[in-house]
Image (cartoon, rainbow, N blue to C red):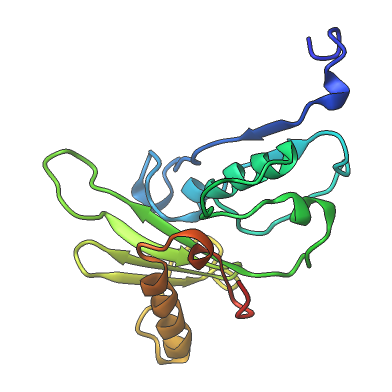
Length: 187
């Protein structure tokens, strides 16, 4: 209908999902958990001035959509944004290899529970999950893409686990630009 009304060439279209879903992975058949099947979702942005057919694989978050929509509309938000516009990434204005630290978290599964189910962080290579019961999981998705064998506590990953734990602490309760953490140290 956008084409028939002459609006298609002036319209941005954003397609995404709020979550993926487990289909038996990790003995789970729903969403919520911080493993790849539940957190990797499609995001398609098309419209005037955006290149067609470009694919990116960087981690972004839903809070980036507000900043992206404001950028596309040409408006400056009146308050600090927790996310950042994805347009520089879509147009190639920022490097493809930029590795962002993305926070992950889920609240209780039911009203009788209190606290968090888990909190964690994800980079292009690693996922750190700290569960409400105190257990910790760390996955190197380059060597374990299905997140089957946690390397938490493995001395070979001690520095990585410490750094990811530090990022997790820094991101708790963040606001504005403090929520934008990159492994190269830039914000």
